[in-house]
Image 1 (cartoon, rainbow, N blue to C red):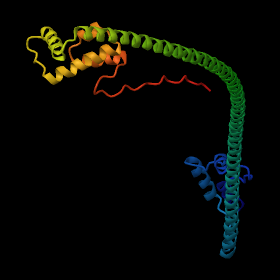
Image 2 (cartoon, rainbow, N blue to C red):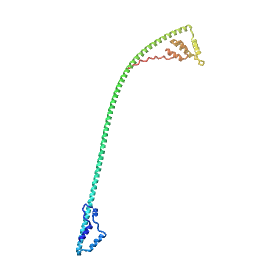
Image 3 (cartoon, one colour):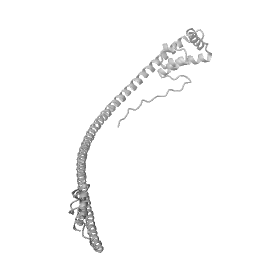
Image 4 (tube, one colour):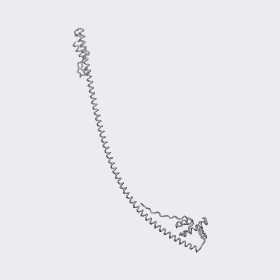
Length: 311
């Protein structure tokens, strides 16, 4: 019986601790006999058979052995399951610890990267702020300088305008004085010219009157008839007229003779009167010596323009 339990113990293998895995226990178990060794063991058992026991005792002993073996196997299975669970829990714990470490490292890297990015953004923002402040300061300085230049330009232009205004006032005063002086000179010249003109007209009138008296004396001495005078004048004009000129009528000849007498009596030059051949020539001589011809509107006396007055 003891040998049978020993055989069952050898078959079940040694009891292992909780820390030994199933693979290690299987490797450490004594291998069962094989071949000649197993035959030898069987022969020894057959040579010395155990004492015959009652059937009830044999069944009881078999049941105890089976229960003991079943308990040992269940305990071994439970231990193996517990060891496997501990191994799995330990592996899971290690994996979770490694994952937690990796997670912490990743978080640390992200934090460091985020801190670096935040520092970079803060530095860039500070740089932009500084640049914007410098730009605003430069722009303000430029605006102040431009305003100062503008005020200086306005002051210069105002001073230049004042100087130009003074120059214009001085020039206007000078022009006014010059205009007044020139107006006074022109007025004096006009008065002198009017005096000379009146004297010349008096001399011409006196000369014309003398010439008229001479003509009347000559006419009275010779006493020619008007028809002979007209015939003589017309004959002279015919000789001077071109060949295709139309001979004037007696009324036109009488009108021309009266013009000739009026011009001679008015003081016109005899040579100019004798050279005249058309009514336009007689009118030109009359306008030249200011003589009114028969049937002509009286000449209008044109007053001299007044001297300009400047304020």
